[in-house]
Length: 226
Image 1: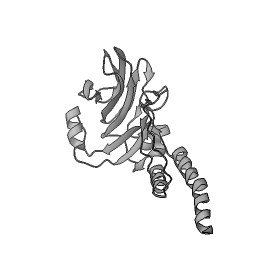
Image 2 (image 1 turned 90 degrees about the vertical axis):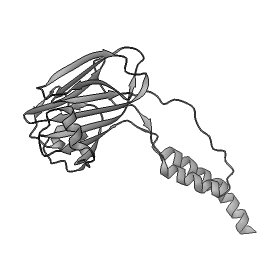
Image 3 (image 1 turned 135 degrees about the vertical axis):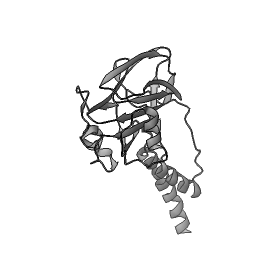
């Protein structure tokens, strides 16, 4: 009988604490793009050729991108004979795979979400060499052939709110760079929910212990990215 009473007292104290701890420790948002890098064996002279080069091929390396600004800062291009790690700058710490491969004859893919305002917005994508930009599952801009670093500028209604984003970029020899602006600001990823596996596991344990706590869900939208 004493053991039963002790169990009940501990259950009221420990398990609610586990639930609170699991919720507070679990990640709720991620605000990065997924970056993928392919060190391809030959030059690409069109965006379709670049797409074919990576079709069904595992990337040489992956990384997380905090902003499409390579190289970082005021410089918009530098030698493509540098390593992937050098090209990514502050994002290099997130590389999984071989970050020593040169950017020369390579293909990048960035995916994630961006927050767009309703109506017309200005877009500027600078590249050396080619790219294809997709917003809300629609191709909105493309540079098919290689070029020296220049900007492609357009004004478009490309979606409203949080929309999916994909940018394919390829580099052939010489100098290289990639920058993307919306309304004159460097584009940054939108925050999106990520699964809190550990927290859910602890909540399940608590529920099985018979806490009888009601599960709640929130209908609040996520705050837009700063």
